[in-house]
Amino acid sequence: MEELLLVLNKDEDTLSFIDLKKGKVAKSVETDHNPHEIAVAPDKKHAFVTCSLGNAVNVIDIEAMAIAERITDEDFSFPHGVGVSQEGKLYIASTKSSMIHIFDAGNYELLRKFPTRQHLSHMVAFSPDEKRIYVPNIGSHNITVIDVEKEEILTHIPVGKGPEGIAVHPEGNELYVANQHDNSLYVLDTETYETLHKRRLGSVPVRLVFSQDGKYALVPNRESNDISIIDTKHLVKGEARPWEIKRLPVGVWPGGTVFNADGTIAYVANNKTNDISIIDMATLQEKGRIAAGIHPDGIAYRKRG
Image 1 (cartoon, one colour):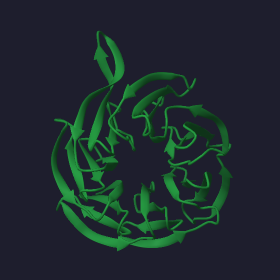
Image 2 (image 1 turned 60 degrees about the vertical axis):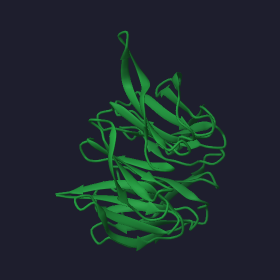
Image 3 (image 1 turned 120 degrees about the vertical axis):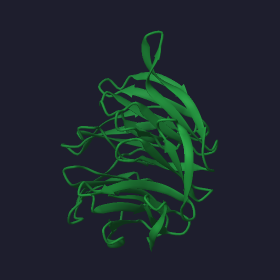
Image 4 (image 1 turned 45 degrees about the horizontal axis):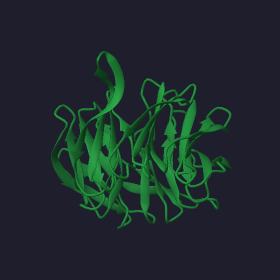
């Protein structure tokens, strides 16, 4: 049974395929300039890599460990956020042009593009039912909500300063947002957009990912070199609430974070120590590191067999 990590090394323009059984890089391939984010397609055979300073999206053939295609558009300007729906559509958030691009994930045809009319639209997060997309706007301090079926903007939700990390709880009822400029976590109701909770995090939180069962949210804090581990339903006097139960030191400048298939292990890309932290989710301890390339950040997991 093969398990791979696909790791983007921003400062050497490469994608590393890490064989988790062997604990080392199986192959590295050259990408366009400055690869940032990566999403694996539903077929598990392809992935999409946004190369922000190259203004391109690289299509990765995972089986061949090679770049299969290259997607460009005149309105790409620092393409960053990326997501692929089960329906087979590819969504790209282009940060500096604040544009949302929608492509056919099979033939890479551009289906539609439109502006958010906000400043620095940066990531793409789906609701579990894929009826909504949430895009954090770093410079506007808000979240753009997009209706997937209508392909139109529903609203913009104010949050903290510099939102970047974003994900919807697997139950679909709460949106978590990590705000890098005020080191805060906002938890919002996905129906009313009401802010339900505010929490302090480490310094410069930049990503956010849930375990598959929704028990934990992990938030890498870039400048405090640690991971905020949030128990999403921590019980205090019978009341369940999201709470940081641990701040776990990892490498320098942690960024991209991903779980394995069953949620027992989390992997964190450490930008400045050029390695991947292995987090045991049973003990909430770092149990090792895997060497990567220079400035690893975007990361994805793929299991086969």
